[in-house]
Image 1 (cartoon, rainbow, N blue to C red):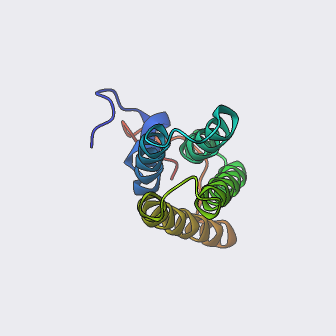
Image 2: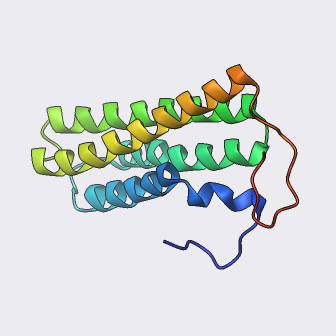
Length: 145
């Protein structure tokens, strides 16, 4: 999916499947929570904030152009992902969210988490081998080399 017509090096995160999955997870969660009226406003807001934080932290870390900071923000995204799952599990356990709605969330959440973990592992490997060059390349839409 093309998110915008404009592309540059700072928008390269939009090509990441994990970022796209995180956006889809927010959309699904928003839809599920809007269809469930017995959840109070504060809890609904906390869940949506946690889910939206996943894609936001992937983007912010990517845009920092520093491998150390990128990894830090990816770990924050993993923390937000865990928070969102825990809150949704609580809703299911308390009977405020149906098993069917939770299953839809859990499938996409698990896929997003797996991709996020894989990205962290890949970047940690690059950090260990020194393969990461933090200079911005001159290639239009290029990524750090």
